[in-house]
Length: 84
Image 1 (cartoon, rainbow, N blue to C red):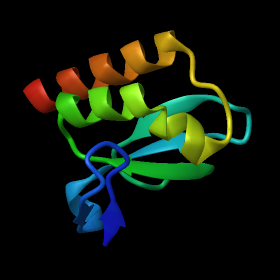
Image 2: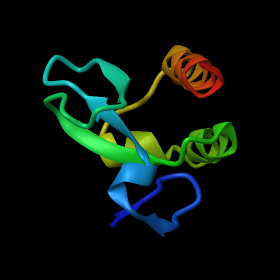
Image 3: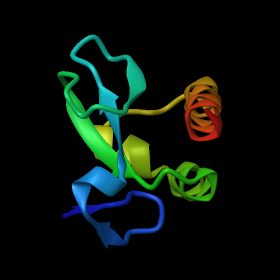
Image 4: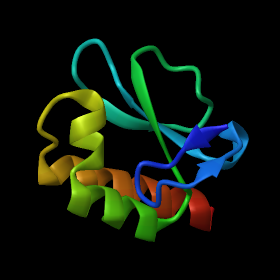
């Protein structure tokens, strides 16, 4: 079980998308859950990502400031994957 950083609900790991901060500092969605780096989990829902953005939940989880461009890229990646 993992907790979504947006809605704060506990869900099975397989139902969530992992957001990973690589050792180089890059932030991306990790759909397989295998990429190296620090991870945080989020529901596959744009609303949860918007909540996480509003609360700066990813910034708190990763211990760094997350630029707006990164959130835009994450939203775009999520929409493409869900609609595919």
